[in-house]
Length: 120
Image (tube, rainbow, N blue to C red; front, side):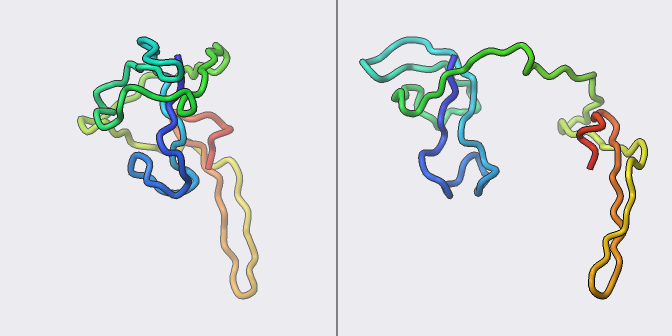
């Protein structure tokens, strides 16, 4: 199993996103066979139909399976367009930020289907 590098240069459009938050690697994908000394054929999903399935080793990164990284989540109530509604549960923290001419109130909210670390 390997990750596939989707763009070799920064600033290039990657899957509709541009900038530092865009994906650099996608995957993991299964290696089907070795094509040459430094190339591998990958089992890519149909969503990546525009990406060639043979890649050089410089475009691959090793996938190391770690069970501690598996995210457990509860069932979500999804709409027909595969979206769900975020509902606030409680206000965790509240403070006021003073600028030169005005005060801004800041509120930290705990959302349903999220943990306390993911409060915004």
